[in-house]
Image 1: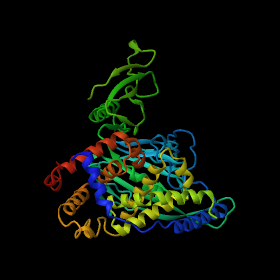
Image 2 (image 1 turned 90 degrees about the horizontal axis):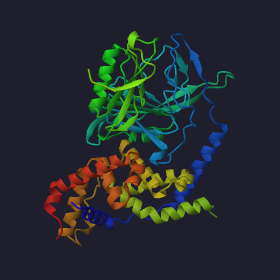
Image 3 (image 1 turned 180 degrees about the horizontal axis):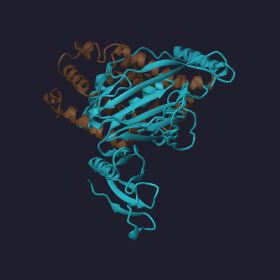
Image 4 (image 1 turned 180 degrees about the vertical axis):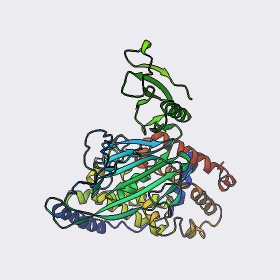
Amino acid sequence: MTGDRIIEELVRLTDSYQPNPPPIDTLIIDGSRKRRRRATLAITGVAAAAVVIIGTGAALTNQTGSPHPDPSTQGPTDPTPQNTRLVGVGHAAIDVPRSWSTNHTACGTPTDDTVIINVTIVPSCAIFPRPRVSSVDVVFRDRRPGYPDFTHAETVNIDGVDAFRTPLDCTNVTSRRVRHGSDPAPERVCTQATWIPEESALFIATTPQPETTQELIDTVHIDPSYAAVPKSNLIATPKEAVATFTRNAQALGLRVVVKTQDQPRFDPGSILGVSPATGTVLPVGSTIHLTLAEPATPTHRSRGPKATPATPG
Amino acid sequence: MPDGRDAEFSAYVGRRWLRLTRTALLLGCAPGQAEDVVQAALLRCYLSWSRVKRAEYPDAYVYRVLVNTINDSRRRRWNSEFPTAEPGEDDASADPTDGWIIRREIERALGRLAADQRTVVVLRYFLDLSEQQMAGVLRVRSGTVKSRLSRAVAALAEDPAVIELGDPT
């Protein structure tokens, strides 16, 4: 069917449709009322959530990404792709604001508008209440997730692939101003998730606004011409970790080039770094640089990084 | 007297109301529902009117809000996704044969597309958006828009109803 024919038929389909006149006065009255209400809330509004670290446990340091971004905006953001970046798993990706940091968490709780990518080790402490920030969790998940609850998830089709999407879940979380002891006021946290089994990709959006949460989840898509840098296995032996990473990357159509660095504090051959970072979405055919601690060969110690193409294990 | 913002917004709604409601119809809303979702979308735009004005393509910004509003309405299970009336039902008496049949079959073929494919067909062929504009509306890469559109057109071309209609000579 040609494009011209499609245009012709679409126009014909709607030609006979004549809606009622636009309700301009109603829109302006309702809109003005909502604007005044928002202005009132901003002036008298809830206290900023205080961060309280309670409990004990290993003070594992989470990676912190880019510096503190601008606060999350209310309502629709500029739709131009230049203001967003893609993060993902496999060939699946989600759009997040470019200003968001990566893995900006404390005790596993986001403390800034941030993308949380494959943070699987969470220290046994807690932040209460959750700060009023937005976050997207990007997780490699090849079996049904335990969180969020996918019991009532609907089956959706994303770019021809079956996926599961949870209902939007908004709950009130009580905030408390610790220092001055003011009355607790409810804050809202809205969560929605999409799991794509075929890509082993789980995306969880959590924001204070239901519309913002849904807008984020709506950007999840699958594009076989792009692939996300895979995660590295923190538990496997160095040799297994490198082999698995290389195999996974090559299966996605990404090239892996290995560099070594003289780092005697690390086990020889262990992964020191991945560039670009895990979760970064790249065109298929792009190159990932894997930096390993140099093997223990005292007679042939190198003075700097050297690169070799990786071979799968 | 309405201030400048209200006057601008009113003028915009006056110009775009028909196009937006017809777009909502093509995206699968029933005729009555189309006006409701467009009104809801325009209310959101009113609240962020300064962002609409600053956008590189204000229309594309509004279309994006409309698409999101329709998705929201489906989640809340408003009326059925597909028109409750057969297309051109009122026209059956005026054009009981070929024209009405063609419109009905095209409507059904469109309805058989996946939601995201239907959306790109409407954005491209009814609203005449470029790939870049569509990418902005849907917040995906241009390449994704391109492949989605290609699959949608291929699906339409292979739809039995469309094949039976044949191409006009």
